[in-house]
Length: 220
Image (tube, rainbow, N blue to C red; front, side, top):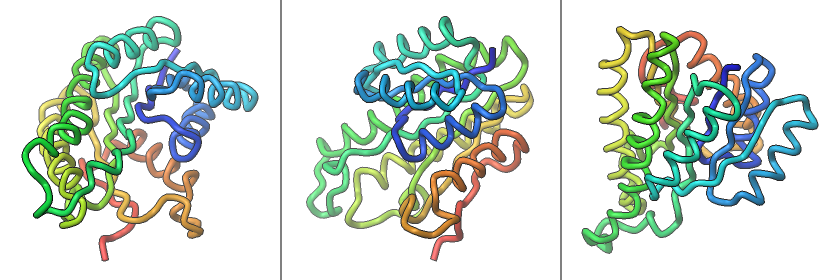
């Protein structure tokens, strides 16, 4: 069975993407740090007819992330779509003049190392079936650095560079790597900002396999 693994799965965007891909026949592997929350979300999705299971992992712990993806592949089927969208911690968002080198370790491990670990875990399986998608979800600081969110700005820039390089390297193998930039709050009252609308856009990125970077809305 075809599986999407959602790293950073929660009750908002992650749940909406799970339901959107579930309607297309995908099984859903939910990955985040809390097994209890994952189990509750999986129960909700199964009640809606979506095959889903939770696998706890910390993206800053390469071994736990690799194990979660291995278990997802074994229990639900080949991971053919990977969504990397963990929510950065507030402590990663410090003003630039207050940020020292040590403050960048966490955000870089979180956004760059975690994504690289996840990508390398799923790429061989995607190659074995001849296609796949790796979808990176970021805020506006990935393309427009913010002076009060230095850690995420630096880390997202690194992830953006890695994603673009991966896109160029894997495109000839029919493995699409894309980045969605969401320069606004999710679920802020605007219909186009709702988790469901963004989930539709993420499905389109996978289905149509266009350019590397897609904007949910133009940057102001």
